[in-house]
Image 1 (cartoon, rainbow, N blue to C red):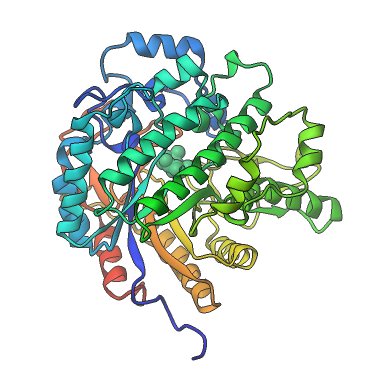
Image 2 (image 1 turned 120 degrees about the vertical axis):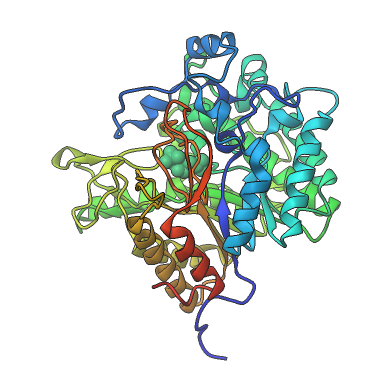
Amino acid sequence: MGAPKGFPENFLWGGAIAANQAEGGYAEGGKGLSTADMVPYFEKKDYTNLRELMHVTSEKIETAIAHNSAEGYPKRYGIDFYHRYKEDIALFAELGFKAFRLSINWPRIFPNGDDAEPNEQGLKFYDEVFDELRKYGIEPVVTLSHYEMPISLVLNYGGWANRKVIDFYVKYAETVMNRYKNKVKYWLTFNEINTTIIEPFTGGGIVEDRVENVLEASYQALHHQFVASSLAVKLGRSINPDFRIGCMLARMIHYPATSRPEDVHQALVDNQLNLLHTDVQARGAYPAFVERYFEDNNIHLAKEPGDDQLLLDNTVDFISFSYYTSLVSTVTPEEYGVTGGNLYSTVKNPNLPVTEWGWQMDPVGLRIVLKEMYDRYGLPLFVVENGLGARDRMEEDGTINDDYRIDYLRKHISQMKEAVMDGVEVMGYTMWGAIDIISASTSEMSKRYGVIYVDQDDKGQGTLNRFRKKSFGWYKKAIASNGEDLD
Ligand code: BG6
């Protein structure tokens, strides 16, 4: 047979978005408010401190709920995918997408989270979106929860720190998995599940000023999400045995700053903490090191009898992850400078260039991550987010010459191909954005990831017209050649 020479025939090329960053229509069609609807636009940014930027307090929530408009809250208007999805999907079809990753906006289906009945208008909206995708033979890849839980579950229950939320999620998962059982095959239970630890409000609906021990509450919330994810896997398999259900991790690979054993060990620890999530969801158990870690950090996890067995019996079919950047670990961070990164900042790696937002660009890191995760889990891997956030300029003739994005994608896809040739089973690649959307961390429109440009600025001004960037033609060619033509 020999080593694979390139991407498999059925490779799922495509793009990805999240409902809260794209849909808009925040109060239409019976939708309730979500955690994302609480985040205002902020002017001055320190990109090395995203957590501070994204921080949502009780006071901010109160102000946001009283604010009955989308103005100043970019995730409430997104790019109007809610009304323009047909036009957007036609462009994805033109690109030759085999797959499109999107999330279902939970409060569109259960506006308060604990409603007795689902909202039919919300269900109908996704029926139409999936039908439109199917019309072009595009496979939907659906994230059940992507930073958009109903705000009522935060206010009335304390978010995922409360075990009761598992039941609401399972009811929601059951509703949509049943409804779309013939339209959707690929499901992801939680986007970047590790965000619950890194940014507890965004990932777990935890308002930090309402809990005493934030880290403990975050791990408790995470445990509930693990249980909920396993229940969704179990349920999904009973609804349609053909479903393929995966977990999703923001893979943050840490390199040691030096070959000093202390730095190497620190990198190991940081990687263990990141891979803990996939260890639970793919292997079915918490890794051994957590006992001591929890003790040292005053974390007392409340588990119910049966939880461990449930996790063990309902592991995922595949592992999906986002990969944007690599990070650096050291026991002496004060010796180094700091740069930005996806959800948190890191020590600078002198070998890597950074984006305008300070994220270190490391295509080889993608190959390392793929090989290392395949060695560890032996499960198919799916790169469901990767891309470059950059400021694009439209020229007078209407062109957008984003050669830097082509360069980024080319290098990452090339490294992914190397990993495939190294024997790693990679199912697909859905680049982040595909179309420009609101940034998750900074709520900016000007941080653009797409190969499709959307005419809208940070204040929500613009025609919302869509334009093909230079990278559009490049990605189309890359897909048509199944990753062979990357020039
Ligand atoms: C991931 C998220 O962390 O990174 C996305 O899953 C997000 O929702 C993406 O948009 C890029 O991050 P940002 O902050 O640049 O939009």
